[in-house]
Image (cartoon, rainbow, N blue to C red; front, side, top):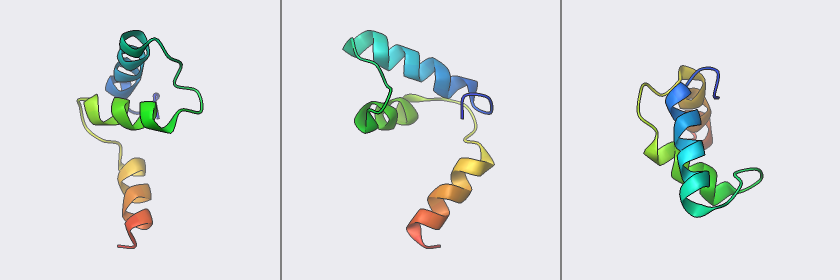
Length: 55
């Protein structure tokens, strides 16, 4: 995702630094970074979310 959404990568680093944790295999941290990320959400992620919601 970081290749298509650089703001997400920046948010991940910010969450890691603020919380003193590593995002590797940390679902809550990934969710937090995703919510904090600015910029356009990649179409691929939107499709995954739509499929998960069953729409």
